[in-house]
Length: 174
Image (cartoon, rainbow, N blue to C red; front, side):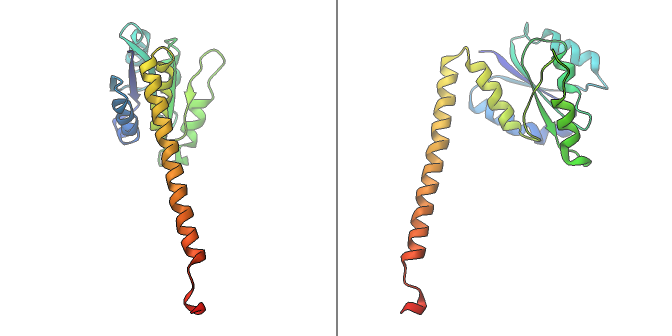
């Protein structure tokens, strides 16, 4: 199976990407996590991206805040899918990163998940890899079934609580 690269613009983004790392690990997808800056180490980021496919990667996840050019820098040097995670910063609550990540010029796409939505980035990466991996596709299908079953159980419990609330005699009725 191909690997997933998670590239952070700063080590301060680690708390944001941790759910992605955990989710990929749960799915048994090999993951490499690195720090590279679109602005401070652009040559290293470009070199990584240029060689990612040859190094066994199938998807790159780029997490960055503020100007958030990392996803675009990585996408410019590869044809692998790049998924951007806009990271919330102290200024503008991540809207700056969201806009910088999502507004790519034609020809250089970066798929973008919500602000700090690392788990969704991991799941999207897994879905991309699952196109050519039936075992991974089955894991994802089972995961979706488990999520649906959990919602059904929560609804059932809620209905029981509501039934008890509205069918129990109130102290005034006694």
